[in-house]
Image (cartoon, rainbow, N blue to C red; front, side, top):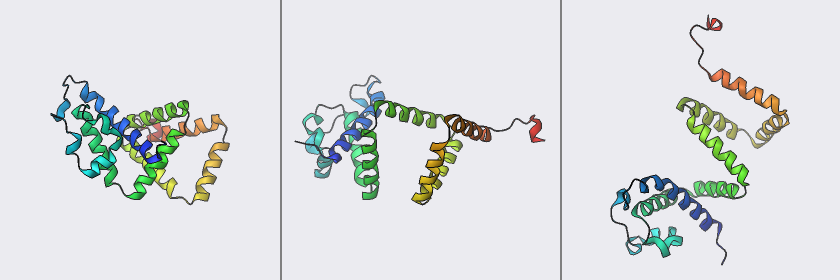
Length: 175
């Protein structure tokens, strides 16, 4: 039996949610912070439908894992069809990446999380403006960037980093 892309995506979401629950499970409380678990029969028909791939092992899961999966299922069900399609496209892109590309993406995400909130907001705004460009303009901007030699790209990145740094009050360029 071949699994549908949606089932694969839900499994990927569940894995991410479970990974997020691991720190809570490692705190020494074998039941997690959720108390007693929820039996499969206590789930609503809709919850059972979304979480169907976990049915066989649901009752053996730690409560904190169950809660994480329930939160993920609730988020999934509250999304618009367009949001779901976007997530499914991104999951497909992720599945098509090589392990090296995934590591690179994780590194970029971690570097982004380390940035100050103002810098994150600035980058999000720049990306939003880029996404609002007509497809032809985006393609042209991407082409120009890709045609730059690597040293020119790095020089451009460095200039942008310098622009973002606050100037020292004693810096003569400020007076």
